[in-house]
Image (cartoon, rainbow, N blue to C red; front, side, top):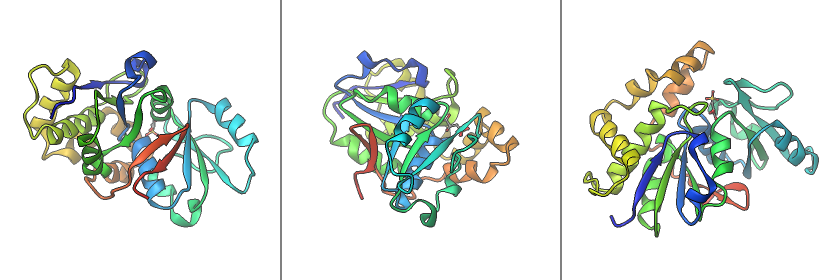
Length: 243
Ligand code: 3SL
């Protein structure tokens, strides 16, 4: 592999000038990336990620009410007045098929919006890992794996996902000149590549979600390669490039 690769550990660490001209994969295993991938798999027409409630409201005002659903969470739970929260299990085909989803989450959608000036923005998680890796093999120039983390802090599940992407991309041989973030994620993935469910389930964010009753979400989001959906950001909207 010839591309340089780096890993950022939280949405807050993403700066427009660092991402310009690069290929960015936004990773929020629990749960924004996993829910976006599931929603596109189940037939959502498109997803508009937003950074906060006011942006969501502005976009909704300009759309026909029968066409969109307001989706997302605050502190893990559905926002008052929204149609759907951030559990992948809410995104059934009969609910979302053909709809535009306006999507607002604490860290994941903020990371996507902050990445919007990159050359290409892809959404990745364990669910679509090999599809993401195959796409990155074709990418020219530098690759950034942008972990959403949790409120400016690192999340173990996002770092493990980033590390596994790097291991697959480099055939298990990390180039010497790799950035520190990539080295750390790579080492993590060497240790835990066969223990994804255990690592994700034991993470701080999984604990928070379990205390809210989202145990099944944590197990679902730990599944590897269940879909070839490739969400890509085009003019502020996520679509499935493999759709
Ligand atoms: O932070 C986010 O973007 C969410 O994915 C968090 S939660 O899993 O819905 O709590």
